[in-house]
Image (cartoon, rainbow, N blue to C red):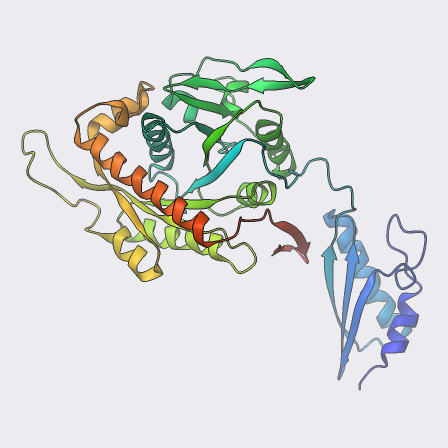
Length: 378
């Protein structure tokens, strides 16, 4: 039995969505109705993402069609959430930050691969090269940048900029830094849902006096989740650097990290991959290299994905020690670590210049939630 579309629409006129004065057909909430054999597919739009309201609307539609059209109808409801024009105050607003030329996201698909270490050393190397650099610690739940820059006990001051009160980033080693870690106690866990985390990032980005920067580095949390989408919704990111270690399990997650940025409706250019913990060289055998986690895994992945390989960082005890005491290892002169990060940084700068010369500026994305999953749109 095939149902008549007009019968379905007439039945839906009996339903009003929460907060709507008119029925869902009259208000334009019904986007489409498709009938096929004994199936009915109803596409609707709502202005609230609240799960209980969406579930109620879905059940009302199913019950009404079964009651008024046919109890044998197999009904599927697709719900598209469209925020009101003014937007949600908890979401980061998509707009550029005045004075910042390039925004580079440093990401990893997997935790524990040294993403924050690479971010910190990349930042100080850029500063040594004469660039104006800032680091935004976007890892809301595990901020480590304040410790790595030896500013853990600092607190940002308030400054007046054009009549508005702004946070002044903490500065060390020529790098401006802001992190949620400045506003929490050492043993305090940050237990926030997505909207609250997004609001905190909103303040760190737009309520701060960053000044003129050649590069802002974003130290993203591991994975591909809500914070990543909020950041990409917030800012026109110039490009992304993905950090991985050589072993297969890390490379599998790094591949997902690259795929996130390359999705059709996100399209943030991936500047390249950095391989951390590439090999171990003991102090007593400086000519030896031991590939503990595998040989050339990230380089092979870069070739496979046809993106640049930015360089490798050896597994050296001094890198860990330098990070623990808040002095990034790249600050040490005439060392293999300094040389490694100089090569990586030069490659990042080169790929950024190439990207800016050949591609249009990246736009901040807009996110629409559909039926419990996210569809990302320009």
